[in-house]
Length: 247
Length: 269
Image (cartoon, rainbow over all chains, first blue to last red):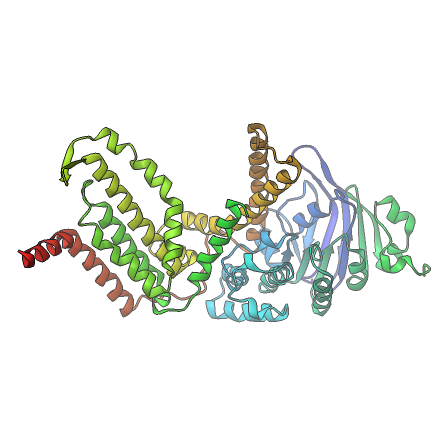
């Protein structure tokens, strides 16, 4: 069985204050797919992402990652498989310097320092940030912070990459560089975002969440041209598609 | 620029100083930490009326500054910033202890004033040494040194994260304060508003703490902060610690100021 498989079956989750966040979410993502997770604020995207990293556990239903079902015991295994890039890089970069931050994961995996160093160099090279290795993370620009936080995850060699709003707070050039960088990655990618133009560039498949359920799951091109669906889910046709006839 | 903001930039300055490359910076953090601890213990071990025997100890922070290329002005401004705390601690001594201890030109000086001066001197020495240590070692390496010397892991992790998120906390505070200032039309902060501001800050802090913890857990955090750099406590470190410690012990038993004064007076008479 592939380590890159993600399968949710009837996932349910309700927050302690009684707010239902997921109300039966099901999907199956296979090896090497790039899937966008879109939906209005409060649609359940963040809750679903937190399930993918085991930060939350399903109240009902199941989540299969690779060949392991998510529960309290399998969390460490799942976290080795899934690399999560947080929305706010300041949440992710907690070590004194970028180099130490990128080494944090590999060292926790129990790798010897020399091997961890090698992974740090490789991961920083993959995001074009080798020069940041000795810089303190709180001094970086938004784009540099984003690159560094992606490197922290790459250094753990995850099979599945999960990104939460990767293009938020980036300037247009930084956003373009990020898109080009993500295109070179061969991991299974799950990208939660409101940036639907980015989805067109990166993800052939889109899952639309609406009020805790999957409202649509299919080819990005078709979903982004379905204006009734987008309106229903409080979304909008990507700018790029607004000025040409639907295909 | 508000006082908070200027302090914020001063924090960055400490890190810049710590990233310099001098022989003192290259020394293992443990050596500098141990020497500083020996310094602190010796300085606070003196009698409360002691002044003259404490003065020679100034040599340690001065040596750290000279060797580590730390500007004296920067150090002095930091000391002044913390000085009100020391003044508050000692200010009542002159009122409580009025026993005259010595006469200067016919003016009796009470024990309270002398112990107050002693508190200020000790404060200056110890704070200068601690600041100079941070400037030549870097806060993170001080933490690492603490851990390698056997300080409990939880304590060191707290210190590290405190330092890292101090910057984020200051940024959050600044944006809250600015947002209030823009709509306050020059009015001062009422107690009610202040309560709401600090309450918000606390809630945001809790939220962030939770997210940071999740980010750490996602990368295999189980309580330990792994260190990338290998530790080396070699000959230079041993010489540094032993050299300074023996000097402190010597200065503890021999009052150099008094001896120097007596010698100079001896020449004159």
